Image 1 (tube, rainbow, N blue to C red):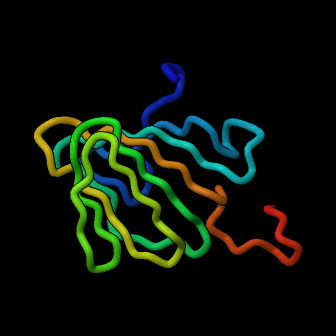
Image 2 (image 1 turned 90 degrees about the vertical axis):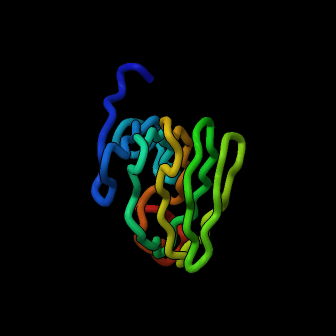
Length: 120
């Protein structure tokens, strides 16, 4: 993990950094995007929605506010949430220290699967 660079991906702001641990860009995975993220205080990912992707967020340390459509949830260490496709969501570090969490996304690409169900 030490060799993987922290990145601030598009739509992430204020020190919302992630490391792509497993995904199409660095492995043979075609269906899974697995990241660790660390958000500085007040850092966030802007509200967005996925067409077909499902996500799981699992908090390792810190606390943050996760919005799912109109509902806001406080997540702390060992809390997790499943985000289905079509749900608008954002995540903001609301604590004083770093917010560290894992994100599993499938499929790795947010395009609908072609006829037959195979990922491109």
